[in-house]
Image (cartoon, rainbow, N blue to C red; front, side):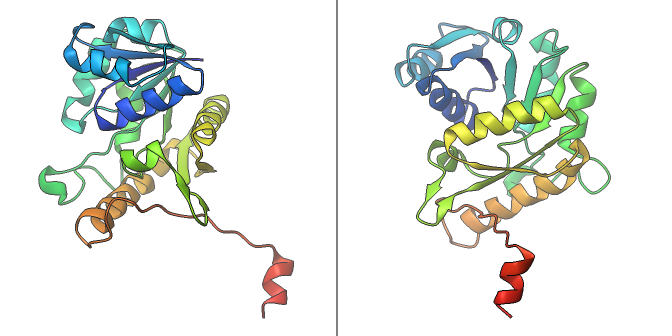
Length: 219
């Protein structure tokens, strides 16, 4: 699969490097494809990774990862070109300065705004609820970290679930794209626990489920 990365910072860079190493063609999008940062990412990736302009990365890819700072997101989508029919993984969070909260919430979400800006794209909210270090290694002693995702296009969600499982996550379908209103505050919870409550960045969430029979046997 060809995966374009828009926003090649910690999140986009980590995901792109990981997917390239399991055989996907990854196109890192930069304003200038000879940017030293691009060359550094390529050096850390498999040979299937390439540096392109943002427009080239979008045009030549089936799946696009949007991992820009929130304040740069609308402009990035405008400059990305035609996104019609593309699976667009929205990994953004509308964080306020100082990580003090979210600039959008309860009645709208960043995921829904991205869908409005990216006309015709098949938007799936994912990879926004854990830090980039967990994306690099989602394996824990008790099993894989859970990765909730949401969207309105069933086929696009299947693709994103497969891509997340390939990295080692336990993908959890959280429902329609409007569930971004829950996943974005959930991301803030991870940030708060990791950076403000002293738990550190090596944390993740586990999804547990039991059957009715198991429930009765434990009573």
